[in-house]
Image (cartoon, rainbow, N blue to C red):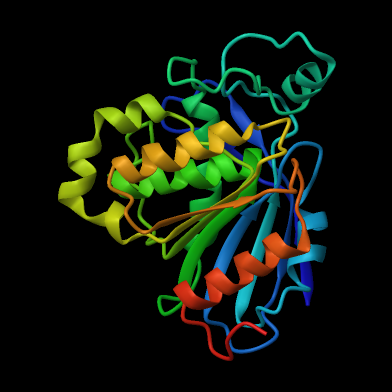
Length: 266
């Protein structure tokens, strides 16, 4: 069963300078025994409903999917404006420059925090015996990876505590935001142990012309070196900036294994 929930206004933290107005959220209830809940975040020009329609057809009957729709106003993950038509479109809709994903690029921590806090608001309402995860595509994948970053350090960029437990993180065609901050806190992650025990799956296409394959590779390397030892990076040779059945099969199989779902992957 699919349910639509009205959008919400979320502040990006105690000192945020602007509110973030999220669109409607689509929820796919599990067809079988409820064992896990995953918040799934969409990418450029998409919404939660379209991903609900895809996710409800996966052979994962024990997962509840929550698919929010991102804020309609732009926010800048990376500084500066792009010059190409594609990058102008990306910046106008999602507010980031896909050509500036370096560690030195400016980061909109308020925007990242607002999205991650929105994720946390859903996960915090789930029953205590349910395994929790976050995943996404492209921009949604970047937010999912940022949420893993916050979970490992136990707090958001604004200092507010990250109260939920994460059991799985999935990123498709995404990248690691705030890589410089991650480098600065490596030792703390390893001492805490949260990073080492968190399963992460990153998938990326070698033909991706939006978020280039090298960003996916570099993100996986940075996360692994920071102590995220339970990370799987899966390349797809024929994949661009989109999804294919083989990739979703890999996601389904990985989630079934890591979340120990009943029935197995069919």
